[in-house]
Length: 352
Image 1 (cartoon, rainbow, N blue to C red):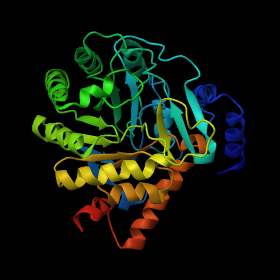
Image 2 (image 1 turned 120 degrees about the vertical axis):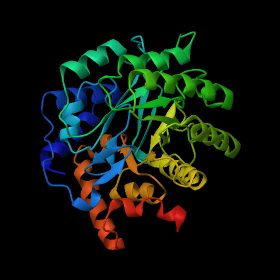
Image 3 (image 1 turned 90 degrees about the vertical axis):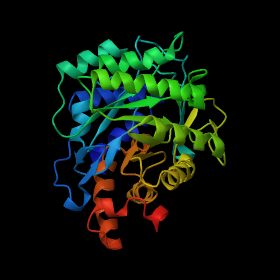
Image 4 (image 1 turned 120 degrees about the horizontal axis):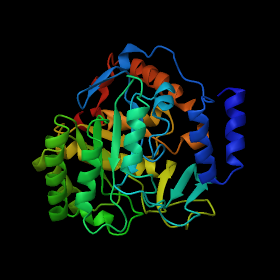
């Protein structure tokens, strides 16, 4: 990390965490965060979900909820960016404070509640501010808190953004919208995915649809969800969202309500990822997310079955310089283990 980046991180940490996040978005839009133009080692190039990626590291949903900084984020070195969650109507979300730093744990708790500008604002930004052809853009699909038909909400967001996004993630695993996780129940999930996939076929044929899961499912629930994914024809799974667990935390904010992300989530989310890879036996591409803050942790997700990896919370502790650090570190780890291509390392812990 250079001195300027270190100074910027220290300044942001003096702010309330939600204000700091807002300042980071503004800084990206203003060009205050330098891009990363170095060549990416060829060993990291990968094919996943039909995309030709320079490397497997992308940005998770939640950082750029409203598609305000897609281009600058790609310039920082991410190979793909996921926007959202996006809902049909704008909504404020839950009352503040709703984002908490757990510095002792290198973690965060949020209870945002799908705060966003709504699908029309996101659609306008993606059309008017075309992102460079440097990587795919995903949309995290959400539902409004007061909606009487949440399935229709997911369909609406996909349909309205069909022409300005490259893939879609069905988010039924956020813990911050009442009743949302109930959509992971087998019958409800079957109906939801049927409707979303039909909308995709009508408006965005060929574009991947993924399902993002909670890390808190029982073994039986996880098995049901995977069965539904395979039977429905979903293109992939994102594992995992934030957790409601609070095991072993040291921070004074440990008791705050909401979803926990960051380092304490790493082991739990990776265990779920590994189990999905074991059950699916390579039938579905997997995106590993949860607690990634180093090249070693990104590599662990890949060996557990992830073709692509996402991060978010670690940026608030290490800054955008973490992106090239992880990418170059992955290349060194591959070389150390004798792999010539990143794809050769995917799932080696599961397949042996």
